[in-house]
Length: 156
Image 1 (tube, rainbow, N blue to C red):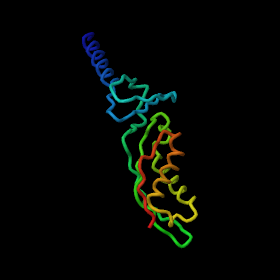
Image 2: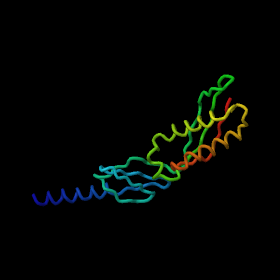
Image 3: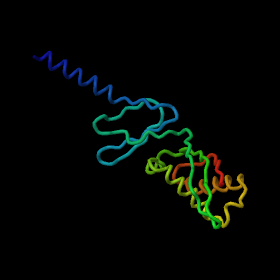
Image 4: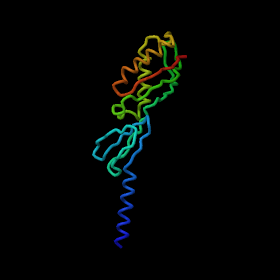
């Protein structure tokens, strides 16, 4: 009977040690939360975690993301379609963790608001619009740990 208990303890220890090792791929950051709400981020590499106390909340890719845009946009003379892509990436995972689940919605809303802020956006040249949108988005998103790398939108 004591050999069975010893074998059970040995197997439980091996399983616990196996679950304690997390391998995080290059270009990815994991956010872990404990039951008490405390959070920590893990960079790429191999790390020890507490399998019963900590859980992975977000797997944040630090490589580029693409946000497709296809929105009907009201103009003074009718309406037009704002379509294209916005390329963005996470530069600070700790700051971006709180909003990473809704980052696409946030970027889309801020791009539409920036386009609405222009009196007559249909008269704006495409390259001008793209560079203006990129700078406006970066001003508001950089403090959140996100940067827009390229904007390719058209208003037709």
